[in-house]
Image 1 (cartoon, one colour):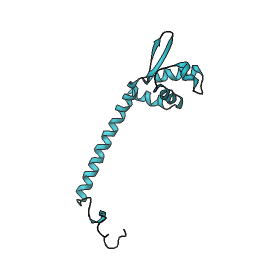
Image 2 (cartoon, rainbow, N blue to C red):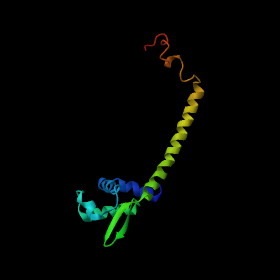
Image 3 (tube, helix red, strand yellow):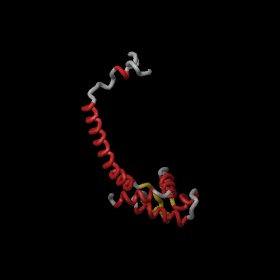
Image 4 (spheres, one colour):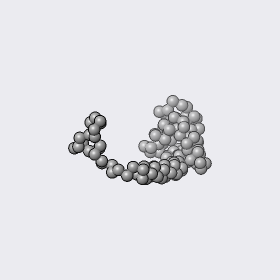
Length: 126
């Protein structure tokens, strides 16, 4: 796993950090504004922001004497790229399984057993 994806997954494992990301989804905020609605101290919020920044999930910028934090898509893109590898493999495996099943049972998908306008085969209940 790429280092960035690993750091992102580790960072997202904490509920306080996930709450911070959810708040930042509405726009940039300062530490004080983030700390107001969290059950942790302002220094703890700063620590969480440092972890999120190291994972490239948030970025900071100076606005006058304040530091504002905003979402940074870099970390999410790293995790998405990591997970996309598994998704592509899973789709390939599913396609191979479907093709193998079609070769074993070439019956069309809407045979008599699946058509509501025909009576069920003998011994089957509707």
